[in-house]
Image 1: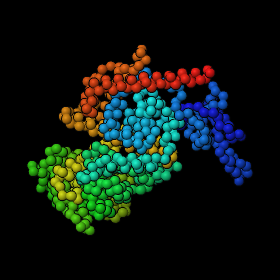
Image 2: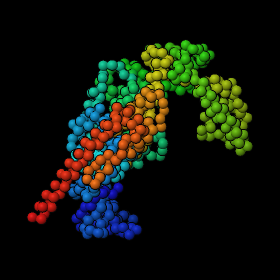
Image 3: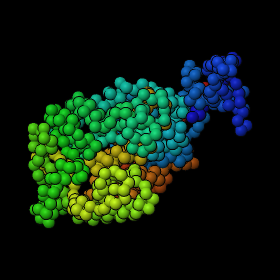
Length: 582
């Protein structure tokens, strides 16, 4: 990545060379020489550190390698002569500022981060509005948006690079402690917990290891998990851990972390990936309740489902109308070694039954066609088909002759069809089927918000190569997730209040619509609101208890602030010019 600034070519006599590639002069630095025993001579190890400026002798445009090999070189912190755009997009900025004020987030970050708190929050807002985290595009964003830095200073790539390379471990811990200290620890809460991983190609990042990647298994990954509150309105804390560590093992460390943050009366809403005897016993020992979704194909769950089939599917007393399913609760032990009674909540959905049956029968038809082809080719099944073939086809032994004479197991197929439409939730605490489903369905919100971190904050990849940079960017995206989740929650509640679905009330659509609220620099050289707030924008603003009058007031205040900043900058430049002339 090339930095948006110019520096003097460093003094490294005999170690700098210039090479033209497609008529562009690149500067290479010789950082080592290596002796080749076979060829019996030394070969130079070189790396490109930037591009030479042909219009300015002795100057160059550095890249990130320049910072690595010449860390003592001075880089400009501001973006030179760049001017602010005459058209500023302010609508989404005003809404995000309102969300920040509600959480006192700007004050908290200022206390913990210090003088660069504005840049930290600007990078968080940048990732929300642009749905990306590539730092080299931040100056373009800053050109036409209000900023949270002091005097709305537009920083260059080099300043951002230095900022991301800071060790923020203590500040990150301090923020998470402060953020969780404000939560109410007296009431029992259920925490939704989910994890994912980020593909990584950077060999220098200690957390990046080969593990169980969800996308590309050929690359190392960083595991990343977030704990949400019961209502899925706020992320509580997060952790990044090595890619080789499996989620089910890391859960126990996360439980200890929850206790350290002061959450004593806690229950966890977990995905099926955390289902394991070790985790269940660990939660029991620490007094944590749990709500876990399990697959209906698990042997124990299948037995419980088969024991109640036909007893609750049509009963009015078992109807859960809000979710259009029927449910029943069955006390049962989870493991033979269990000392406590668990509660299996079995649910049935006609719609789910139809969809699952169609998929299952399509799978059987596909395997029947495949078997016919295999018989013609005399080739045994492999890969994904083998797993399903052994389930619904019978053949003796493992020889080809037995396989070619395989026949369908009608009883097994009918059994699988009977289980279509059923699913189960297991809880450690006694509750009704409706209460269990309501708790787990709240997890849908956290999953949507969690996906937002990767899909709508651009964080599928961190795009940095150092441990400190990865740590800092994950810290920034967590704060961005707090803000975005609040926006999501406000929009969702507004739609529920109006009892109608509106396409512009999703987070991306709402932010794009708010970005159309602009301030224009007029002939008086001051910024003014360009046009009145539209009906769609008013509907979005209502979700945040804001009106068109609030936008007018905030625009006036921002216009005054921008006028003050530009006046101070003009006076500063005039004073510098006067000193030079003297």
